[in-house]
Length: 237
Image (cartoon, rainbow, N blue to C red; front, side):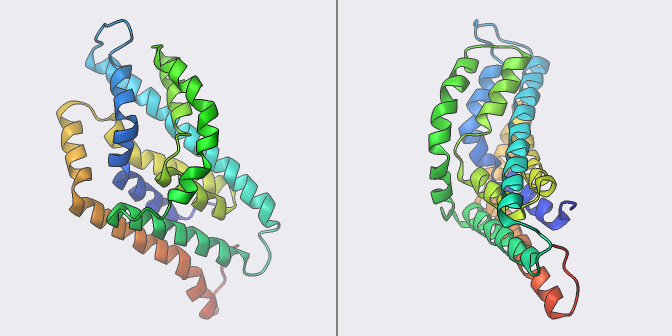
């Protein structure tokens, strides 16, 4: 199964809209990577390189998590060739996207219960992440990003739930990669451009519009297969 473009688009837009939240949780780490740990301030190109490596590791961990939950969903759901299975899975994915859009647009914390699930896992990962923060270098930046990708976050875990509902390793991994790429511009940007980008993504109007777009795409994801079935069309499982 190839990833659905509508779902990937919704994940990417959700990532852009949620990047303000990501900056609050990870922005300080990205900044510290460019300063080194021995008090030596590195140049802008090295800072940019560290930011790219950190975010590359973070997006890679999102993608791996998507492949894992997609595989779990595939095994738990049995054969995806069963009649109506594709409609149900698309509907669940669409509902999760709608919940993400509502959180982005209106601040409704509908995904908070999902966020609590990862607290126990993060308790085991956090000591490793703190150890890497005391180091510098390319591998430390990649490793820290990969570990920080598992930080409990309602938006990330909500998208993971959508990836679980997709129940396909390829589509689920692509969904999480698209979300991670959406968060990347604000996280990688430096200097004046970063300040301007963050100002736009923090603006209530931007978040409202982006959230409504995600809600619309979530509705389309959930309802399109049902509409096709009612019209006598064929829905891919």
